[in-house]
Image: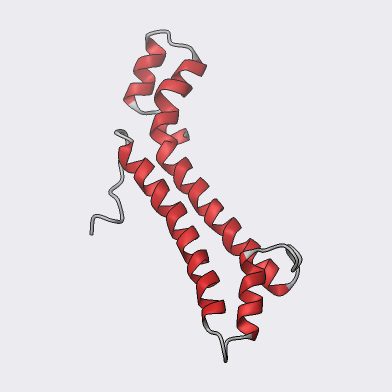
Length: 122
């Protein structure tokens, strides 16, 4: 946000007498929305992975409640005779994290003020 403060469109709005809150809402926040959405998506993905990891280690939600970490823990104990008990929760964890990141990518693509190229355009 400090970098945007010196840009021409912010200075032009300030010179025209637009209030500070309006400049922030109409000019600065739309340009920082890409970064804010990416931070929110990565934090959401981290919450899913950390929550599953804590439950896997026994420090999260306790076993009567179904949670991805609890399902991974019970599946790892039965890997010899029922590998699907481990693969299904692992696939769901990966799909959840990937869907959070891809939803954020889709929202960023719809942002006309986005200055960065997408990592999907390789």
